[in-house]
Length: 78
Length: 271
Image 1 (spheres, rainbow over the protein chains, first blue to last red):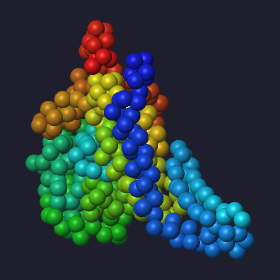
Image 2: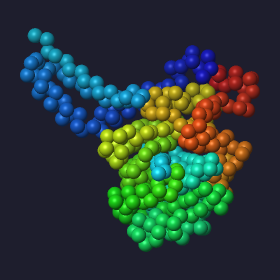
Image 3: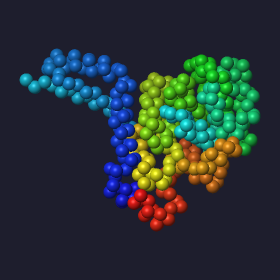
Image 4: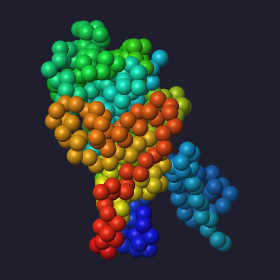
């Protein structure tokens, strides 16, 4: 990539494509895993024994050689 | 025992068959006994690319149904004696494919050949899952455009979930082959660059094939482009074949237009 195209990075359609793909694929990966919904339910059940769950978000990501499961559990503040 | 590579893609028309033909031929030229199997039942195409359409007597269905032996159905290339080919049937019926039959066929091929290439149907089609069942490794062919990249992420997911190796808890090695790279568009930032595709899909790169008019000429003649010493795409396929053999071959810059003069380059920037 030349210096010029780097300077004007955001206006390139290739970068627009990349950004759109990142979002679309992240969504695809979520929807293609029905087991995630079941897992969410189970985790909520476990955490709820000890504290109140506000929200839960599970993401599966490919980071090079390793696959990463990211679980975010938001707790209700008293 | 040979190694089985399934050549796959999300959507059709990205150059899977061309890739399978050229890589099998490339490995044969490296002195490896190789076979390429047309797994796209009902849509026989590989025979035309290889220029072997007039030599088919029996096809994959005849072999799987036990009507003929594998050796009776294999077609040997005249130009490259290390290369063999097994044709797809022309019947639309893909129900002939079943787990046991595919397993036996792949096992038999692995016994005879060092490299087995399976030219799979596109990911959305039936028959795809059978092609990846017994693959040791897969080559994902992608074009640098959004629908192809998105769909290939889905088929990579299917490989991870459905292949026998994955079911045993082993990793199916996945390699990315980016086909039809347009140097001028990439340079202008109008075509997704290799690094970005690798970021998105997160699998290993095995080849970058530039857009090349010689590919059409090659399929017209039934002589894979790797045989054309003047073809950029052919050279790129040769390098991929060497990488598969285990040689360390640096990735060449196929993104910089060759014919572009300095002035033209400057003009291109301000377009």
